[in-house]
Length: 314
Image 1 (tube, rainbow, N blue to C red):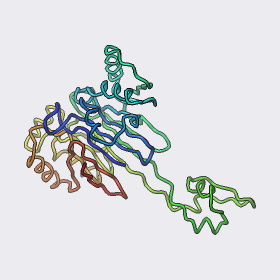
Image 2: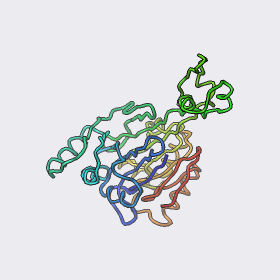
Image 3: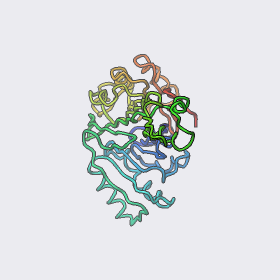
């Protein structure tokens, strides 16, 4: 699993940062990419990545502020021009459907694929055999959601020597056992898959929060997560200002991670007032509360591998 930040700024684009969009790359797991928010210019940022728009089949919108949604019409249109034919689902507040449909209709845009809309409310908003996505309302100046993405436990590794001891011949039966399917040998012997697999491997958990001031819902969504993505629009000297605008400071983001007993924190949605050394200060201050803190930069890639978070330079 990889997280690539397509935009990491707050409110409006700056020379250093585009507005919010985060790509959750699940190519190894399910061959898909999920977007979280789609600020203006997201399709331009994709041009500087390896992400193919047709691989994006889900977009989760946190709230209706322009810096989180203005890129939707352009992205949806370009996905058609680039040969996208598979369905795409947009999850978010009820208003997102009206916004997208109006933009598509008024611009006479023709899409070559169906777009489905799911209105988000508190609870599970998506679940299949691989993942569960849960949403909770946060505390911003407009209705806003955070999302918790949980990968379901993976089957254990096939213990080949144990399978051989049961008399299982190499071939397709090994694949069935590895996929958790019990098999029956030619002599009638039933081989339960659990008897030839190592214990299940725990899946990862990623929490991606929309704009919010410090609140209990953020901690609930981030409980023991492997990675939290939390806004840090302001620094600790402007706590009251942050709360008035429904935003968080770097210290508050770190406090959420600490109280949630998470493993890693990535701060994003950074105000344009912080550049250069000021960004380094945001990180160093946050690390006094939560040591495993990182800051997102546009196009920066983070990889979750063997239960470790790796920062991959673009």
